[in-house]
Length: 292
Image (tube, rainbow, N blue to C red):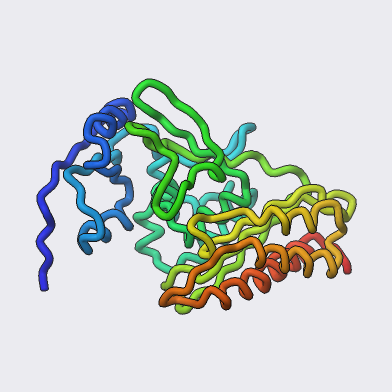
C-alpha cells in the first residue's frame, strides 16, 4: 500500500539566524531537516506529523570537521561517512571512529549527520554513547544568543532534548584528550543492520600504570544514554586490577534501568552491561600495556 504524505511546508533558510527564527515562529509544528535519515522515515511511517520542515542544508559553514587547540570540531551538516574518513578522527579520537565504523549501513553513514544522530535522542545511539564518553559539548544557536551544553545534560528523556524554542544545534566540540588516554567501544546487536541491544563506551586516562580518570557511557539500557558513575568510581585511582574491573562491571549493571522489548529482555541487557563493560576495560588494559 502506497502511503501518501500529509502536505507540509518546506523552508530553506540561508542563515542560522533565519532558521532559528523559523523554529521560534512555528514552534513544535516544524522540524529541522539535515540528513533526514530518521526524520523522513518517521514521517513516512506516520509516527510524527509535521506542518513544515526547516532544511538547513544550504546554510554555509555547517559542514566541517577539523581539529585545533580547542579539540575536535564537527559541523551540523557533517556526515558520519566524512567523520569515518577523517584522519583526525581515526588517529586522535579512535573511540568515535570505532563507534561510527560499527554502523553497518553505508547509506546511513553517507546521508546521516553526527548532529542529527544526537538530536534524535535515542538511547541506542552508538555515536552519542561514544561522544558522551569523550565529554562532548553541543554548540547551540537561538534567536538572539548562542550557548554550549555538555552532551550529558542534553537529553531529558526518550526523543526529548533540552533545546529551547527557536534553538538548533550547529555543531559539536570534543575536547582534546589528555596524554595517556585510551578508549574502547563495544555493542551487542541481533543482526549487523540492527540497532544496539546494549552499547558501551569507555575512555580512561592512565598515568604511571594507574587510572587517573575514566568515563563509562552506556546505551540502550535507560530512557537516555547514561554514565555509570559508580562504576567509574570503582576504577578511578586503581591500576585496573582484575578485582577492580569486575567490581566496576557489577556496579555498571546495577546503575542501569533497561526495558524488555522485541530486541531483548531487561535481565539480559543488564547482564550484557556487565560483560561489555568488563571487556571494554580489558581492551584498554591491553592497548595500554597494563598487566594484572
